[in-house]
Length: 144
Image 1 (cartoon, rainbow, N blue to C red):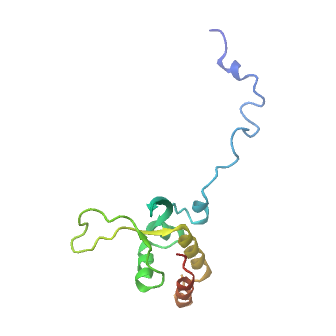
Image 2 (cartoon, helix red, strand yellow):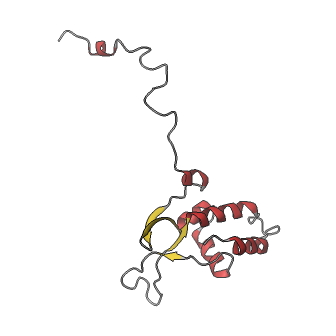
Image 3 (tube, rainbow, N blue to C red):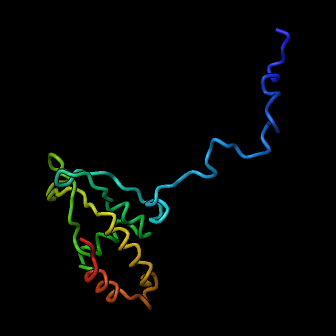
């Protein structure tokens, strides 16, 4: 019992650590979508028998730095095409008098395209907003 517990660490060079650890990467690897798409995260859904990486409307909104209500408004006004995919319809009626359809799903290509389009056209200032040019560009080039 006369041994000092720190004697175990005595043969370590430069303890407690003047050099970088050799068994760890210098920085954690982030997923590509989280870096480029403002933290938007994809979810895997089975569509047509194959697993596909899809984004919900909330994650699409995060990627383009808007709110989901803005994305819904763009969809209803025809600025962006309607979502090609939806989640399965929930069982039972959720809101009385409302048709239940399931959540909108967007592919990675659609999310990346819309994020680039929003950066390309200034939409924040109402005086210089180019919504008509933005709409024409999105409709003409929307990925399937």
